[in-house]
Image (cartoon, rainbow, N blue to C red; front, side):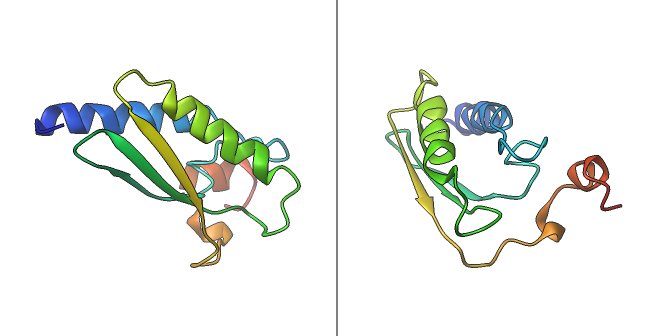
Length: 107
């Protein structure tokens, strides 16, 4: 995507899709939980997402990663999605949005 407006629109669409994905144990989407560290879109509309989990031994890790991959791949402008699971930096509750912290009673 060479046009800046198209790239910004695609980024917005990707974020909207990611915000529909929830950790099944927490009533907050994974974006507001602070689990998405980076979204990178190359010139061929391949999307690389760097994300973490609230705990390294999360029992639903595979299903969350698959859901992110599948839903972002479903966006017509996206060519291919790769999700990289990382644990650095370590996730903390301070990474959550203020809205998420309020929802979970941390504020």
